[in-house]
Length: 312
Image (cartoon, rainbow, N blue to C red; front, side):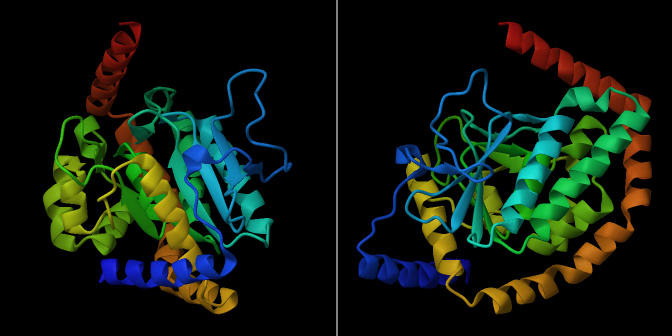
């Protein structure tokens, strides 16, 4: 069903492109994308390192915004910046769709920055509220959304993908160094929050949630496609996937704007009501488990391994 829907959308988009004599371009070849906030060339060099999140418009499809993550681990500052940029996009009425991607080698998003887990209950509670807000602005967006995940998408990386309407991923063909995806919270001593269980079960199935989540199981891309977590993965390159996702979103955005937006709002309404109503309980529960001795020991060991690996 998903592949039929994609083919239909792309057929319409291809016809539209032919009428306008415009050929799709890949993100890698885009040299004159525009930063939405100030409309200055995104190719301009930064005085220091680029921000953790940047937003550009596709060169040939200006109704499609491209949100690019530049950091593998999600810090509190990164989360705040993404919320700020997303709100700016929501106000730009020329936009119909958003691609969420990263420019990191072999990683879409590695999840929460482990340092955030170790800053104490109050600090982590505030951080978790912000993470919930990141999810909320994406999941409740008026824009058509798709994640273009070229690498590992673990924990929060998987959550960001699930917040979008569609997920596309590199790695459909067997081979070395394949990317992985999944909710690995249990593996680091933290239970999967209730709303994430419901979201995962809604996208895949209750049975898949029962089999995978209590084990903290990370899946190959092929497994993720088979359970419905990833919609399409048979891409030969990141450039091919990125270009495909833009075309797909253009096709999806051919539907009348107001009718489409309201329909998606209704589809996601009940989940959002429950999600928002559970905030205090969710923050209290996850903070309790993060502060648990078992979780803290696992997290400190994991952070030490990452630190040692970075030194080599």
